[in-house]
Image (tube, rainbow, N blue to C red; front, side, top):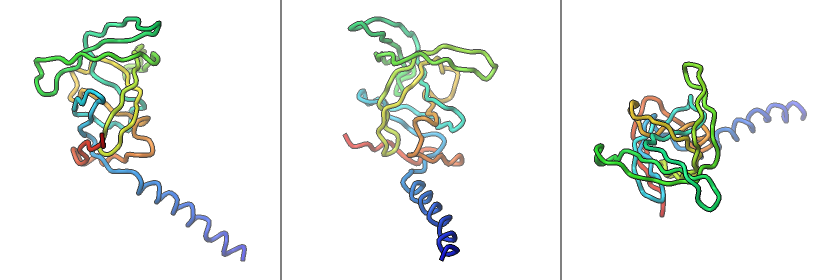
Length: 164
C-alpha cells in the first residue's frame, strides 16, 4: 500500500505542473502590445533574461500632482516615427538597474496596463531611452510570470485581443 502511494506522488506533482503549463499561452520573442487606456500599439521584445519591463521614453520631465511625483514623457508614434505621443504617469518608485557594463543607473518606474495576447495586466515599467534598440518596449519576466511561455523561434503569434 505504501509503495502504491509513493509511486503516485511524482505523477500527481507532474500533473499539477502540466495544468499550470497548459494555462499559460505561448508567445513569440517579439509581439505587439497595447498600452492602455491610450490604445497605443507597440512592438515589444519578450525577454526572459530581463527581470523587469522597460519602455522607450524621451523628453522625460518630472512634476508634482496632488503631492505625488509624476512624470511626463514622449514615446515614438508607431504609425509615424517622426511624431511623438506624450504620456503622463505617476512614478511608483525608482529602480536601480545594473547595466551590462556593470554600471548602475537610476530609472523612474511607472505602472501601466498592458494587453499582451489575451492577457491584460498591470506592469511596473522603467522608463529609459531605447531609441537605438529595435523594440520600443521590453517585457520582462515579472510581467510574464505564470501566464506566458516564450517560443524563441517565433514572432507575432499572439496579437493583442483583450476584451474592453
